[in-house]
Picture 1: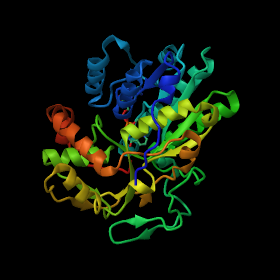
Picture 2: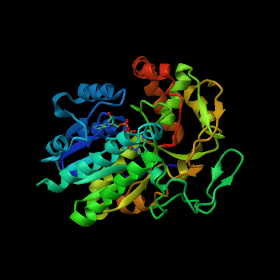
Picture 3: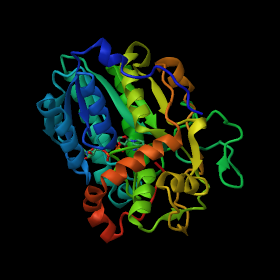
Length: 375
Ligand SMILES: NC(=O)c1ccc[n+]([C@@H]2O[C@H](COP(=O)([O-])OP(=O)(O)OC[C@H]3O[C@@H](n4cnc5c(N)ncnc54)[C@H](O)[C@@H]3O)[C@@H](O)[C@H]2O)c1
């Protein structure tokens, strides 16, 4: 269950003049992070290609809140020169930009590689060359652990469980990149670690599992929690790949933002380290058998029946983070309970419904919103 810990904003209060660059800052996680940093008076530049449908909406929302206090650079992390200019002079780079869907990575592995692996190398090179010696915090993923080789999984009535890993999967779990997305994120993850070892850049890898919350323009390619709520609200078909017993740990976006910021606040400890960041064993849910009742509660009415399709190759049957290293080093733990987080996400989706219909319309028409992966 959620525990209350003082996990927010240390860095903001201690260093009000810190200049931050948030790549992917118009995305779901990035816009929430930028909002949090700006609210604490930090200097923030959002760097984003606006390639993700809905990112313009998030940028407009940030501009509406902060006006000229927000700097924005429209740019692509694949372009090393543009990245070098953006990184010059900043103290902290939160590197969140990237291609985020496993399905898209399978369709176009080269593009996926360039966004995630090359894009990250560009950020690291820019940081290495910068006179300001910035901290680099990287948004990696639990997908680097792939099929969890060696981890025993047991089927129960409504979920799969990890009987030998009750506290969850820790950072010592063997790496096992699956899918082009797993490879490109995993390569980036390892480059980020190595730039600390070889060049002394203060880097931190945050291996995030399943994040959810307001400003998430979820589609079934990625962002399944928001997608299920959006689909329920708009009465769109929901497809479950597999038996719906797959287990994920859900982390509300405010907690994810706090984790990213605590890595910076505790950089003396976190530099060169890797952290598994997720809801942990207290915030797990199976993706349909247990999520459906939670979804019904969040919507306040019964939701449409889901249809089932074959499980996706490489889909983890159960994954949840062991967050004890993050608790120990960063003083961070998840605080938002799943039912509360879902209620807050549902509120945002209801308020944003007309805009969401526009954002998702093209994808829904093409049917590409009707696919799902694990994050
Ligand atoms: N959301 C999750 O559950 C989750 C889980 C694990 C890891 N992550 C990682 O966290 C990061 C943020 O995820 P998110 O859910 O906010 O994704 P998102 O798609 O909402 O945000 C990504 C942002 O990056 C931008 N972008 C994409 N390619 C770019 C490029 N080449 N150059 C510049 N900008 C580009 C997009 O326009 C978008 O605004 C990603 O790196 C993702 O892989 C997310």
